[in-house]
Length: 288
Length: 287
Image 1: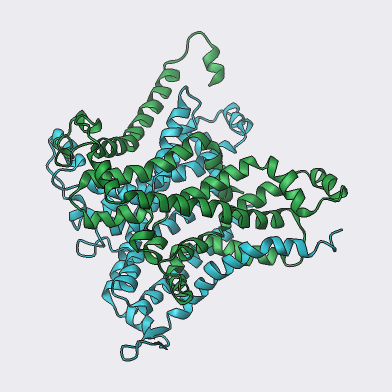
Image 2: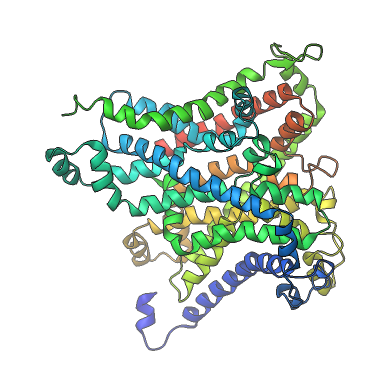
């Protein structure tokens, strides 16, 4: 195709094919973007006008033509800020505490030879990676209940710290660091902690960004576990808050959509500047 | 040097592996154990009940109905999502001006949660004033009930799940496409293969591993679909969207019947183990 482009007279097909590709891509884009545009516009619309331009449909449905901050004002007046704060806290603590634990484990699997390495990897990491966490939620719930962690931060946080997908990511990255880098520091008598902090950490930005994004977004979007273990108002995270609002304030559509847009915008703003890292983080394990 | 350092890797592993063991592996085993207990009505204590919970669910038409709905759903949603994801990944793999913008836009649903997706689509699909009906109105097509109809509700759920699923799985297939060395495709072209031939005879066979992974991962993900059901139909109308994970939640947490719930989860666990076994076999076999 590149060879064809260099010729002076391109065959008609050389124009038709890209046109067809663009056409199909644009149809897909409309399916992706229109729901989000409508939801965003409706969240800035007075409640009684949320569906005004949706049925019958007009382009006005996609723009906040009757702009108001009413929904956002009411939402935060009712304490929505608390759910946003809770979710940020949940996500950040998971990224730092969980991230550290997963990075250490990834380092051990990626850089060391030791007895039982494969057995530990296959039985614990691999198995927990393959069994979806929602499937084991009830016994985990009973366990948390026995520890007395229902409706506590511990119950919300601790089960989400260790993440086999993130251990995979770190293992893969650390395994590729040149041995000479580490040997040089070890010969100088550096402890493993020093090697980790002063040699490995500074060159690990790609995997740190990828793992951080993965953990942050999966906690930001988490729903099933927080719904079971911490339904109390003071501990509610954003996905639980908007989802309970579906039943409770079923008719306040603009507030429901405002909450949903806040829930959506944070991961979108995080993913967009780091697209390559994020895509690698989610696709990495499936392909290696 | 290695022998002196034997303790270090274990120390590094300790926090993460203990957490995985306690909060992931143990509950997996406990699901199977829990399914053999019932809560006694008289004392409120958990008592061993053998296979009573399994007998109960196997004699329960609602369980079979939800398994049936889940199977039908899976048979439609997985091939559909993978076919569309394959198509989308081929489109966004074209070297065309502005393709990066399209890739960014298709990443939006991947970042958004299933809950937000379900809430927005529930309103879009509203039978009276939803935008989808608004567009149909402009096209001269009469209102559709969507989530309120026994015939259309499951299809609406499929649409909601696919809005995220198609772009998500296309990322995996795109990565697979990009791993195909260009000389391989050029060689096919020199040998006189047309676009379709080089797709079916070169590209698809090279994507086999990725597609196998996506098929299994997609199947497991859709098998466990929960939030869209809770937020749209709650299993209705007439149990037509009562997918199996929602049914276990209904039993366990709305009706407090944890024994029956755990029995259902054990059955699901078995099914997932079979799917995962296939996954391991496929991924190992083609190394």
